[in-house]
Image (cartoon, rainbow, N blue to C red; front, side, top):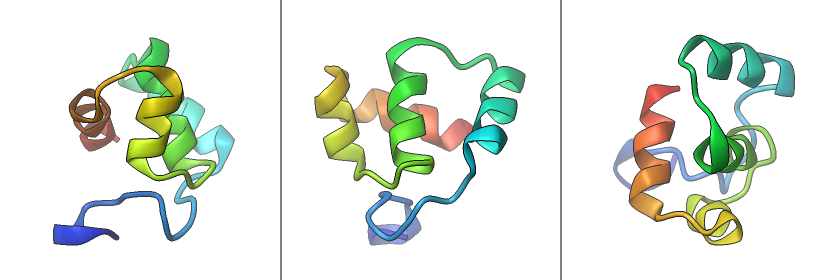
Amino acid sequence: MGRRGRFDGAEHAVLTGRQFDAIATLIRSRGATRQAARLVMVEGLRQCDAARRLGISGQSLSQTLTSF
């Protein structure tokens, strides 16, 4: 966990790819925010790095991650 108990991906991945896909399908996550969330939750990238890589705002990614 990062500051204030928020997951920032810096420590390690928290879901397998299969788990992530199942949850993403259930919550109907799509597009770049879904891809960025996968980078954080499965690959272990930091939120800011994943958002930058996919050209989305950190706030948008943060909101998506709270859904997971």
